[in-house]
Amino acid sequence: MDQLENLLQEVASQLSKTGDDTLLQKVKKCEQIVKNQSTGVLSKFNLAGKIALVTGGGQGIGEGFAVALAEAGCKVAVADFFLDRAEKVAAKIKEKVGVPSIPIKVDVSKKSEVEAMVKTVIDTWGDLHIACNNAGIVMHSNSEETSENEWGRTMDVNLTGVFYCCQAEAQHMLKKGYGKIINTASMSATIVNHPQRQVAYNTSKAGVVHMSKSLATEWADRGVRVNCISPLVKIVLN
Ligand SMILES: NC(=O)c1ccc[n+]([C@@H]2O[C@H](COP(=O)([O-])OP(=O)(O)OC[C@H]3O[C@@H](n4cnc5c(N)ncnc54)[C@H](O)[C@@H]3O)[C@@H](O)[C@H]2O)c1
Image (cartoon, rainbow, N blue to C red; front, top):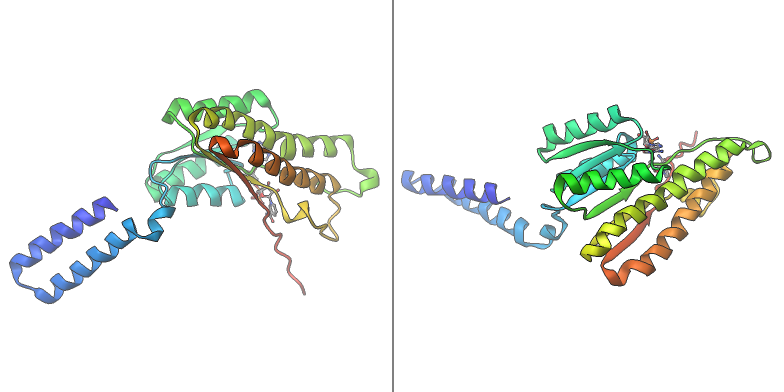
């Protein structure tokens, strides 16, 4: 924004020498609009200087989070189980949005990998302000046949993984007295979609909602806010 303001000032100064008053007035109007954006209410949504981390950032909703945070001015670490996906999104952010971005390989169900992910962000940029714990998986089966693997892996990634992330991120954020954590739950945390057979998923996401409430009340007075979002599944009716 500063760059744009400076550029417009330069153009206005050159125009004032040419005597083209109509164009000069237009440039001055642009200057005012830019000024309003950097001091007005929209400036409160400007995240320039902030450092963000998004898990499951390699595609889908996580990619959307990562790009949006970058567009708002954050440096963004894109973490994913598949490094090539994270690399692609980080490269897109650097090229199209023009802010620093790094890819990180992580399996959020592994505590040591989650700790290493947070350490990488802090070692690279010195801080961590915003974390979107978004990585999640879904599998389907009739509940009477749901396997130990389906139940276990879903809980490990969707519930325990989100907890490991919150914990590792908060250990840094609480020391600094500042942090914003946003966990991705689901509409399936509170309602049961039919005909999807996904008892493990629904249960894990209900856990994410209550975990987020528990952490929010525990850490709020130390400067760390925890929220969660519950995206809707797009249902197409024939
Ligand atoms: N898409 C929807 O309709 C919808 C609705 C409600 C909630 N959600 C939730 O939103 C989140 C993102 O959904 P999406 O549709 O973008 O999913 P997606 O499958 O398109 O993307 C998820 C990303 O997470 C990564 N991932 C999976 N397991 C991981 C692990 N163990 N460690 C690190 N990364 C891992 C994947 O590689 C993938 O890139 C999920 O938590 C999902 O449950 C999605």
